[in-house]
Length: 521
Ligand SMILES: *Cc1c(COP(=O)(O)O)cnc(C)c1O
Image: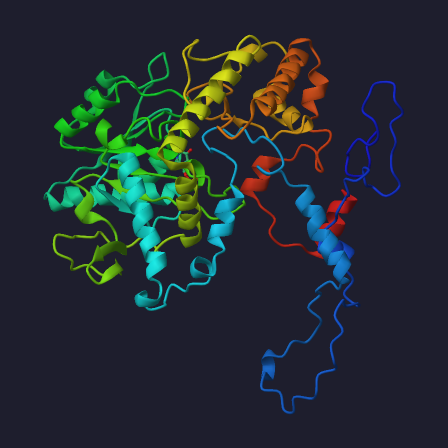
């Protein structure tokens, strides 16, 4: 039985009576229209005094002629509207969030408390530096931890996301090549790369040459060597890669790249798998972004802005963008302009110093974990993914055979063959089970990819519940229960949406005419 949102109501058990509610709500799950649909323009929730006549209006022809149509609501109505919307949301605080490559780990509340300390939360980027020495020192200290963890001599803290860090790193590479008086115009990118890698290279004018994956999902140094020449500026390699596998020939690849006079850009989005275990600097990396919002647990996915510091090798260090932190006898300061001895900054990535709130959270995460705690987090992340892999490989198929994975496990859709169920259907059915779907159809090297990253912050109990649900769904798909999947999700506030249309033709403006037209359709 479906209510007016197409949501089934009442008990879902076979044989139990399904009920359509009169309110459109499903028990404590409340249906919630738009503010414009529930509000009325002729009422208001605030009691304002009649304004005194302002005398002669200075607005002239700009004075508004009609009402602006802002809906009036009482305070409780406004409160309920937003609380109800928040309850339709799914976040890491609601349940397991297995979105591969995204590292959706728990955001410790301690970090939130630290970020709200007035000395960090209430500073203004234009304050004199002498009044914000503590905040600058924190940026310096976080820089140091990132350098130690990665084994790299320099870091640019200002990039505001992983993709922004990629841009900074690649711009440093471009500047270094220009400083050598060379022109190089191609960048090598393995097939399994995240879309931001080729996009970044293309954005700053490079031609992208793809490197195929081996049968086991990793990059073959011979394939890299075959594409290296004096025109190659860099390779952009993710390690562990997006198939959840460690690129075991990374040192050999780095050596070949350097021999050709090119640079090694590492996509560090998967750093969570190796923190405290391996240092990218030791592997021959020249530049690597770190997604603080993945590896160091700062909120993301609608929960907060990202931060993508990029660590740089000795060769790239002089090109680090301003502003950066230096410490001397007078204290710590942000270098805002070029002109320091030895420095040739390629420019700047953002107006100010970066995402202060995220720096505080990441520093708090690091200090509360310590070196041993961060190493254990990496180990546990890898253990969790291998536990999921071992528990589901009997019902789902592994594209690269039964080899151990790193912090995420990649399945393909061969096991769905003949069931009439697709990867997308399977992902939607996970919503009915109360889970955010895993990453689907990425990486592109695998057909119908399902990439699961449980992270270290899930207990064995919660992993077992997740595994049992996926196991149940997989068996249902194989048993021919395609209906359960084709029309899923059944229990979400909204049913299957046209996601492509929503992305390509987003409707950003509500108008009463459109709403009426849609209601009639
Ligand atoms: C998340 C991610 C990125 C981009 O990072 P953003 O912070 O989302 O810009 C790049 N590469 C990989 C492999 C990723 O997982």
